[in-house]
Length: 304
Image (cartoon, rainbow, N blue to C red):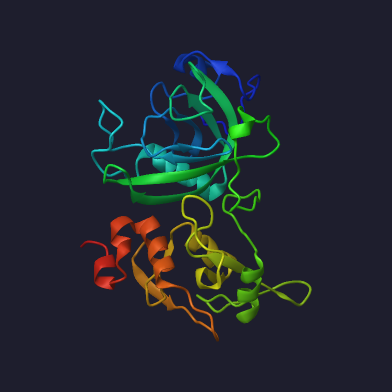
Protein backbone atom coordinates (compact mmCIF):
# COMPACT_ATOMS: atom_id res chain seq x y z
CA UNK A 1 0.00 0.00 0.00
CA UNK A 2 1.34 3.44 -0.95
CA UNK A 3 2.05 5.80 1.92
CA UNK A 4 -0.60 8.35 2.88
CA UNK A 5 0.61 11.74 4.13
CA UNK A 6 -1.85 13.46 6.42
CA UNK A 7 -4.43 12.58 9.06
CA UNK A 8 -6.54 9.52 8.10
CA UNK A 9 -10.29 9.95 7.76
CA UNK A 10 -12.09 9.53 11.06
CA UNK A 11 -8.98 10.10 13.19
CA UNK A 12 -8.74 13.10 15.53
CA UNK A 13 -5.83 14.77 17.31
CA UNK A 14 -5.73 13.47 20.87
CA UNK A 15 -7.37 10.14 19.95
CA UNK A 16 -6.29 7.19 22.10
CA UNK A 17 -5.21 3.82 20.71
CA UNK A 18 -4.83 0.82 22.95
CA UNK A 19 -1.97 -0.85 21.07
CA UNK A 20 0.07 -1.01 17.85
CA UNK A 21 -2.55 -3.12 16.12
CA UNK A 22 -5.14 -0.37 16.65
CA UNK A 23 -2.71 2.19 15.19
CA UNK A 24 -2.17 -0.06 12.18
CA UNK A 25 -5.86 -0.63 11.53
CA UNK A 26 -6.60 3.12 11.72
CA UNK A 27 -3.73 3.80 9.23
CA UNK A 28 -2.10 6.10 11.77
CA UNK A 29 1.16 4.12 12.10
CA UNK A 30 1.34 0.90 10.12
CA UNK A 31 4.62 -0.81 11.12
CA UNK A 32 4.01 -3.37 13.90
CA UNK A 33 7.31 -2.60 15.68
CA UNK A 34 9.42 0.08 13.95
CA UNK A 35 9.25 3.62 15.30
CA UNK A 36 9.55 5.18 11.83
CA UNK A 37 7.30 4.40 8.87
CA UNK A 38 9.08 5.45 5.70
CA UNK A 39 11.46 4.82 2.83
CA UNK A 40 14.02 6.93 1.02
CA UNK A 41 11.90 6.95 -2.14
CA UNK A 42 8.54 7.82 -0.59
CA UNK A 43 9.46 9.72 2.57
CA UNK A 44 8.22 9.11 6.10
CA UNK A 45 4.50 9.33 6.87
CA UNK A 46 4.56 8.62 10.63
CA UNK A 47 6.73 8.13 13.70
CA UNK A 48 6.20 6.91 17.25
CA UNK A 49 8.03 8.58 20.13
CA UNK A 50 8.00 6.31 23.15
CA UNK A 51 11.25 6.80 25.04
CA UNK A 52 13.20 4.14 23.17
CA UNK A 53 16.25 6.38 22.66
CA UNK A 54 17.93 8.27 25.49
CA UNK A 55 18.67 11.27 23.26
CA UNK A 56 15.02 12.01 22.38
CA UNK A 57 13.63 15.37 23.59
CA UNK A 58 9.86 15.95 23.64
CA UNK A 59 8.90 19.62 23.93
CA UNK A 60 5.33 19.30 22.76
CA UNK A 61 5.09 21.47 19.65
CA UNK A 62 8.65 20.61 18.69
CA UNK A 63 10.53 17.34 19.09
CA UNK A 64 14.20 16.41 18.82
CA UNK A 65 13.87 12.85 17.59
CA UNK A 66 16.63 10.25 17.33
CA UNK A 67 16.85 8.15 14.17
CA UNK A 68 16.86 4.38 14.33
CA UNK A 69 19.67 1.85 14.39
CA UNK A 70 22.69 1.02 16.55
CA UNK A 71 20.71 0.33 19.73
CA UNK A 72 21.20 -2.55 22.13
CA UNK A 73 18.05 -4.72 21.68
CA UNK A 74 17.96 -5.34 25.44
CA UNK A 75 18.18 -1.69 26.54
CA UNK A 76 17.94 1.90 25.29
CA UNK A 77 21.74 2.29 25.00
CA UNK A 78 23.53 2.91 21.69
CA UNK A 79 26.20 0.34 20.82
CA UNK A 80 26.93 1.37 17.20
CA UNK A 81 26.73 4.36 14.85
CA UNK A 82 23.51 5.10 13.01
CA UNK A 83 23.32 5.38 9.21
CA UNK A 84 21.52 7.99 7.14
CA UNK A 85 20.85 5.23 4.58
CA UNK A 86 18.83 3.14 7.04
CA UNK A 87 15.25 2.94 5.75
CA UNK A 88 13.45 5.02 8.37
CA UNK A 89 16.21 7.62 8.65
CA UNK A 90 16.33 8.00 4.87
CA UNK A 91 12.54 8.40 4.86
CA UNK A 92 12.63 11.29 7.34
CA UNK A 93 15.45 12.93 5.35
CA UNK A 94 13.27 12.76 2.23
CA UNK A 95 10.33 14.21 4.18
CA UNK A 96 12.55 17.11 5.19
CA UNK A 97 13.70 17.74 1.63
CA UNK A 98 10.19 17.84 0.13
CA UNK A 99 8.22 19.13 3.18
CA UNK A 100 5.99 16.09 3.70
CA UNK A 101 3.79 16.11 6.83
CA UNK A 102 4.60 13.41 9.39
CA UNK A 103 2.02 11.93 11.77
CA UNK A 104 3.38 11.88 15.33
CA UNK A 105 2.21 9.25 17.80
CA UNK A 106 3.25 9.32 21.46
CA UNK A 107 3.50 6.14 23.48
CA UNK A 108 3.71 5.71 27.23
CA UNK A 109 7.09 6.69 28.67
CA UNK A 110 8.34 8.57 31.73
CA UNK A 111 10.51 11.18 30.00
CA UNK A 112 7.66 13.09 28.30
CA UNK A 113 4.91 15.14 29.92
CA UNK A 114 2.91 14.73 26.69
CA UNK A 115 2.92 10.92 26.68
CA UNK A 116 -0.29 9.05 27.59
CA UNK A 117 -0.50 7.03 30.84
CA UNK A 118 -1.00 3.89 28.73
CA UNK A 119 -1.26 2.90 25.08
CA UNK A 120 -0.73 5.53 22.38
CA UNK A 121 -2.11 8.96 21.48
CA UNK A 122 -2.19 10.64 18.08
CA UNK A 123 -0.59 14.11 18.39
CA UNK A 124 -1.18 15.46 14.88
CA UNK A 125 0.99 16.49 11.93
CA UNK A 126 4.55 17.78 12.15
CA UNK A 127 7.18 18.89 9.64
CA UNK A 128 10.82 17.80 9.71
CA UNK A 129 12.56 21.19 9.80
CA UNK A 130 16.17 20.07 10.37
CA UNK A 131 18.30 16.97 10.53
CA UNK A 132 21.94 16.48 11.45
CA UNK A 133 24.52 14.05 12.84
CA UNK A 134 26.11 14.26 16.28
CA UNK A 135 27.71 12.13 18.96
CA UNK A 136 25.06 10.75 21.28
CA UNK A 137 25.28 10.28 25.04
CA UNK A 138 26.66 6.77 24.62
CA UNK A 139 29.54 7.95 22.40
CA UNK A 140 28.23 6.81 18.98
CA UNK A 141 27.14 8.85 15.96
CA UNK A 142 23.37 9.34 15.89
CA UNK A 143 21.04 11.10 13.47
CA UNK A 144 18.78 13.75 14.96
CA UNK A 145 15.60 15.20 13.51
CA UNK A 146 13.81 18.34 14.60
CA UNK A 147 10.05 18.10 14.00
CA UNK A 148 7.72 21.06 14.47
CA UNK A 149 3.98 20.85 14.80
CA UNK A 150 1.98 22.34 11.93
CA UNK A 151 -0.24 25.24 12.98
CA UNK A 152 -4.05 25.28 13.02
CA UNK A 153 -4.49 21.93 14.75
CA UNK A 154 -6.15 21.09 18.05
CA UNK A 155 -3.59 21.93 20.80
CA UNK A 156 -1.93 19.05 22.59
CA UNK A 157 -2.09 18.68 26.35
CA UNK A 158 -0.87 19.78 28.82
CA UNK A 159 -0.83 23.23 27.19
CA UNK A 160 0.99 24.82 30.16
CA UNK A 161 4.10 22.73 29.45
CA UNK A 162 4.02 23.25 25.69
CA UNK A 163 6.71 25.95 25.46
CA UNK A 164 7.65 27.32 22.01
CA UNK A 165 11.24 27.80 20.91
CA UNK A 166 11.67 31.60 20.77
CA UNK A 167 14.73 31.33 18.51
CA UNK A 168 12.63 30.17 15.56
CA UNK A 169 10.41 32.36 13.40
CA UNK A 170 7.63 30.20 11.98
CA UNK A 171 7.17 29.80 8.24
CA UNK A 172 5.25 27.03 6.53
CA UNK A 173 8.18 25.44 4.70
CA UNK A 174 10.57 22.56 5.28
CA UNK A 175 13.42 24.85 6.29
CA UNK A 176 13.35 28.15 8.18
CA UNK A 177 14.22 31.49 6.62
CA UNK A 178 14.65 34.10 9.32
CA UNK A 179 15.22 37.45 7.57
CA UNK A 180 16.56 39.48 10.49
CA UNK A 181 17.89 43.01 10.28
CA UNK A 182 21.41 41.55 10.21
CA UNK A 183 20.52 39.21 7.33
CA UNK A 184 19.20 42.19 5.37
CA UNK A 185 22.42 44.05 6.13
CA UNK A 186 24.53 41.18 4.76
CA UNK A 187 22.45 40.94 1.59
CA UNK A 188 22.79 44.68 0.93
CA UNK A 189 26.54 44.47 1.55
CA UNK A 190 26.85 41.94 -1.30
CA UNK A 191 24.33 43.70 -3.57
CA UNK A 192 22.21 40.53 -3.31
CA UNK A 193 24.94 38.47 -5.03
CA UNK A 194 25.57 34.92 -3.81
CA UNK A 195 28.90 34.49 -2.01
CA UNK A 196 29.32 31.08 -3.68
CA UNK A 197 28.35 31.68 -7.31
CA UNK A 198 28.32 35.51 -7.43
CA UNK A 199 24.87 35.45 -9.07
CA UNK A 200 22.13 37.97 -8.24
CA UNK A 201 18.53 37.09 -9.12
CA UNK A 202 16.62 39.91 -10.86
CA UNK A 203 12.94 40.42 -10.08
CA UNK A 204 10.11 42.13 -11.97
CA UNK A 205 10.47 45.43 -10.09
CA UNK A 206 14.11 45.95 -11.11
CA UNK A 207 15.45 44.79 -7.76
CA UNK A 208 17.38 41.63 -6.85
CA UNK A 209 16.73 38.68 -4.57
CA UNK A 210 19.01 36.71 -2.24
CA UNK A 211 18.68 34.93 1.10
CA UNK A 212 20.44 35.30 4.43
CA UNK A 213 21.77 31.89 5.48
CA UNK A 214 22.75 31.14 9.06
CA UNK A 215 25.84 28.91 9.18
CA UNK A 216 25.27 27.49 12.65
CA UNK A 217 21.48 26.96 12.77
CA UNK A 218 19.29 29.04 15.05
CA UNK A 219 17.06 27.45 17.65
CA UNK A 220 17.54 24.53 19.98
CA UNK A 221 19.68 22.49 20.21
CA UNK A 222 22.15 24.37 17.97
CA UNK A 223 21.70 27.87 19.43
CA UNK A 224 23.55 29.65 16.66
CA UNK A 225 23.87 33.42 16.98
CA UNK A 226 21.86 35.83 14.86
CA UNK A 227 25.13 37.69 14.20
CA UNK A 228 27.06 38.93 11.16
CA UNK A 229 29.73 36.32 11.86
CA UNK A 230 27.13 33.59 11.40
CA UNK A 231 25.35 34.79 8.23
CA UNK A 232 26.07 34.36 4.52
CA UNK A 233 24.43 35.94 1.48
CA UNK A 234 23.37 33.06 -0.79
CA UNK A 235 21.15 32.47 -3.79
CA UNK A 236 18.15 30.17 -3.11
CA UNK A 237 19.88 27.17 -4.75
CA UNK A 238 23.05 27.39 -2.70
CA UNK A 239 21.06 28.25 0.44
CA UNK A 240 19.01 25.06 0.02
CA UNK A 241 22.14 23.04 -0.78
CA UNK A 242 23.84 24.45 2.33
CA UNK A 243 20.85 23.80 4.63
CA UNK A 244 20.41 20.26 3.26
CA UNK A 245 24.05 19.31 3.77
CA UNK A 246 25.06 19.22 0.10
CA UNK A 247 27.51 22.05 0.73
CA UNK A 248 29.91 22.68 3.61
CA UNK A 249 32.66 25.20 4.30
CA UNK A 250 36.29 24.70 5.29
CA UNK A 251 37.80 26.98 7.91
CA UNK A 252 39.36 28.87 4.99
CA UNK A 253 35.84 29.53 3.64
CA UNK A 254 36.10 27.23 0.67
CA UNK A 255 32.78 25.70 -0.44
CA UNK A 256 32.90 21.88 -0.67
CA UNK A 257 30.28 19.72 -2.39
CA UNK A 258 29.69 16.83 0.00
CA UNK A 259 28.69 14.22 -2.60
CA UNK A 260 32.17 14.22 -4.12
CA UNK A 261 34.02 16.19 -1.42
CA UNK A 262 35.44 18.51 -4.07
CA UNK A 263 35.89 22.30 -3.82
CA UNK A 264 33.51 24.30 -5.99
CA UNK A 265 34.31 27.90 -4.97
CA UNK A 266 36.19 30.15 -2.58
CA UNK A 267 33.66 32.41 -0.90
CA UNK A 268 33.94 36.11 -1.60
CA UNK A 269 33.87 38.54 1.31
CA UNK A 270 33.41 42.32 1.40
CA UNK A 271 34.49 45.04 3.80
CA UNK A 272 34.19 44.11 7.45
CA UNK A 273 32.21 40.89 6.98
CA UNK A 274 33.71 37.59 8.17
CA UNK A 275 32.25 34.23 9.21
CA UNK A 276 33.73 32.57 12.27
CA UNK A 277 35.54 29.31 11.53
CA UNK A 278 33.88 27.75 14.60
CA UNK A 279 30.46 28.22 12.96
CA UNK A 280 31.67 26.60 9.74
CA UNK A 281 33.11 23.71 11.76
CA UNK A 282 29.83 23.21 13.61
CA UNK A 283 27.92 23.08 10.31
CA UNK A 284 30.41 20.56 8.83
CA UNK A 285 30.04 18.26 11.82
CA UNK A 286 26.25 18.21 11.40
CA UNK A 287 26.61 16.57 7.98
CA UNK A 288 29.98 14.81 8.07
CA UNK A 289 30.03 13.63 11.69
CA UNK A 290 33.49 13.40 13.24
CA UNK A 291 35.10 13.92 9.81
CA UNK A 292 33.68 17.42 9.81
CA UNK A 293 35.62 18.42 12.91
CA UNK A 294 38.66 19.02 10.69
CA UNK A 295 38.84 21.32 7.68
CA UNK A 296 41.94 19.56 6.33
CA UNK A 297 40.99 18.46 2.81
CA UNK A 298 43.05 15.30 3.15
CA UNK A 299 40.82 14.32 6.09
CA UNK A 300 37.61 15.39 4.38
CA UNK A 301 38.28 13.45 1.18
CA UNK A 302 36.17 10.26 0.90
CA UNK A 303 37.90 6.94 1.41
CA UNK A 304 39.28 5.26 -1.70
